[in-house]
Length: 464
Image (cartoon, rainbow, N blue to C red; front, side, top):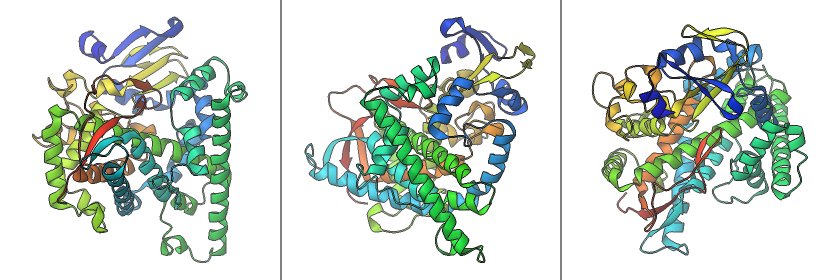
């Protein structure tokens, strides 16, 4: 799609034929993105089959809902994602990341493959575990213990139901060809694990919410009870709005788990993947210098706040560049629910329209000749640094735009910077000897993941 965007003359749209000769319209310009995602957002909805698949996993939460239902949900969830709530979560991001660093050091120094404080580490596994623990505490005020004990019943159930793998891709394809209800009846061990995992997570969420609601009811005369007792998590904030029933909150909770964990873990994996490559060693070294000069070591036990973390310009630039080149969600696909138009072109009802973030984020006509290169400097120099030097702010579409843009953008940015800072400050990352980082395979789905995770040679860097 990137090659098409850069080489095929177009006025912002390209029509092509997809599987079974299905006619698809691809949005190719920031102006088209603005019209698609903002101006005419209500005229496009999810493919009904995709919607059913997502609803089967996440419930009818913010990601799945449409129309007035979506507007209502977003309006009442916004207070749970306001700047104050998110900034107050930064110390938690750091605490959980510090726990991860301690455990990785133990693996690197004493594990079966350890040699001179260096060993191969599957960073995708650690990114998933720390992200799950963070969303457990930040989202629900609950300890998942995925870092210390990844094989608890809850963690195992969550991974079976929510973490994409080759089996889930098969389930996705079968769901497109049949229905989620029929897929739920499929025989086999993996299908059974998926069903049981989904049920277990739903039961856990429902029980937690009932406990929290009972706690609130017992202190109804004290509206600040949750704040005074340290319950500042996202679901607590959503409950305080009194806009959602328990079942509504179950749907939002599963959405928070699935969307909040998976995208964050994917972003961390891609970050370490690119920074570990020898041609970017100077970027990794420079970032480590900034981190160590401004942040306490994770082993110190000291708190790191948003005020401190957000003042590191190179960390901010590296994080933005990772998410530009490797947007965790690679595309947005919608279907016209009525006869409409886009950039003056008629779009008949039922036409699929797609916006490829990976392509838009790297198109030379918007980012310049070095658009395909990983270059954090683009966010540091020049009068256009807020846009990374792009000709239009909507050339950077990692978090979407408009009424369906990512509500957790601030959360994702803060979490990513905290995890990157602790990892790069503590370790040096290089490709495992004898491997080729370019020879990876990507699992394309709701997110873009490296199949099998990413094993990276991890060496403890002393002196912090």
